[in-house]
Amino acid sequence: MQDATYELLKRQILRFLDLDLEAYKQRQMRRRLDTWVEQNGKDQDEQVFVTGLGTRSELLKDLRDTLTINVTEFFRDQAQWNELEQKVLPELLAGSSRLKIWSAGCSSGDEPYSVAMLLDEAGRGTTSSLLATDLDPGSLQKAQAGGPYTADALKNVGATRRASYFRDVDGRFQVVDVLRRRVEFKPLNLLKDSFGSGYDLILCRNVTIYFDPPVKAALTRRFYEALKPGGYLFIGATEALLGAEGDGFTRTNGNFYQRGELAVARTPRVARAA
Ligand SMILES: C[S@@+](CC[C@H](N)C(=O)[O-])C[C@H]1O[C@@H](n2cnc3c(N)ncnc32)[C@H](O)[C@@H]1O
Image (cartoon, rainbow, N blue to C red; front, top):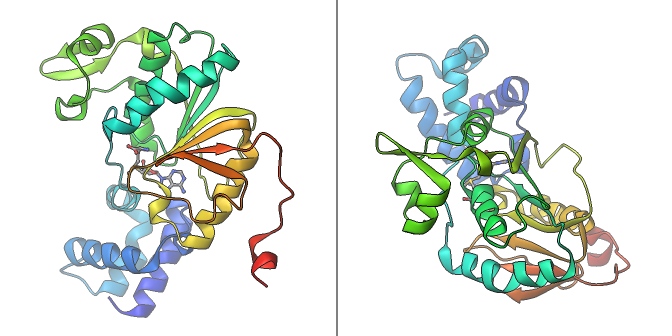
């Protein structure tokens, strides 16, 4: 599409979907939107198509789905979950039986429900709090309803957990109510909404990979502030936090970063670089 159409589309997305695309990696975003406009507006002048989007709710929903990329599954990247189960959670639970945990960018709930299973097995499901947030209302609706999930989404869930935490409904899987009630789901846009503090563990996995590097760095600093000293940030298997050590984190394992015990004096990154 023409540059002017792309700029118009970004304004339409901000207006109708409340999503500021300036914070996302531009090249990826442009490619994705080029394809979307090509597929959905093929019989029309593209400028006219983009201008008329505001009144086409089905198309707007589809556009939101295209932009949010909500691919997920239970215990995604299993080796990291073993680390969580065997090292990180036991360490945190040794310090407190009431953990405060947040899954940021939780998509359809597979990730926070995976944490809920681990807490339940550790006997701390009822005392700990588990918040899960996302900006996509469709994903949150499925998460809140506890599914149903496909067999593929459960491919890393063993038979015992399947039997304890899911009901098979005609070949699709519904999370049992006792687990569902342990997670509080809420809409939250990481780029503009404020968020709480005092977390023992924040999971933000496969979300910031779409963000522009300075936006991602600023968000990492906000996660730091939101964690308790000694708390952990758990990121996606293919991700890394550049400069995390300078920001007061210690990388304890490939995808776990621990906030230092004492808050470090923090200088804005721009000033440091100058
Ligand atoms: C690929 S999914 C990751 C789901 C899960 N964390 C995982 O790793 O399996 C990315 C999620 O991030 C959400 N997301 C993207 N931008 C966001 C933002 N600005 N604020 C909150 N959530 C966002 C999307 O809606 C989507 O559900």
